[in-house]
Amino acid sequence: GKSSKPKRGKGKSSKNKTKKVVKDVDILSSAAMLNAHYICHNVPACLEVRGFPWPGSPKKKGKRRK
Image 1 (cartoon, rainbow, N blue to C red):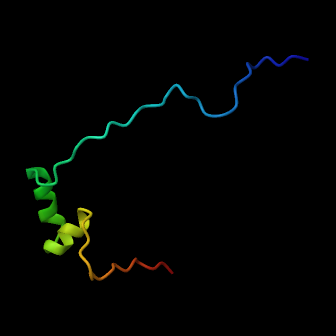
Image 2: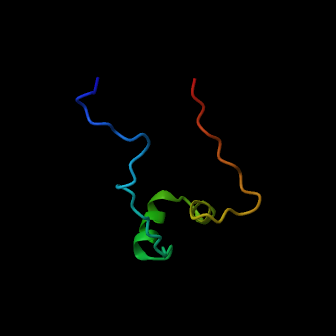
Image 3: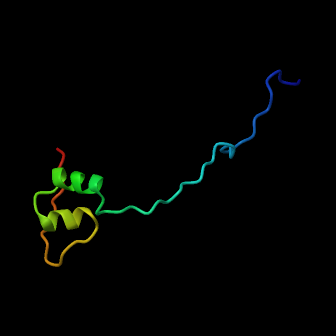
């Protein structure tokens, strides 16, 4: 017999797709500088956080879980 429930399509719906807008970020803006002031301890750490690692820098060791 026929089911009383409507049939649904398989897979993900494409009606909720949104495009991400890539903005140019100024790493020297006042907000970025304030953030760097609170999260970095020195200049090499600041550059590493911003994506400019310096050669010979010690690698961070990840936390090991038991």
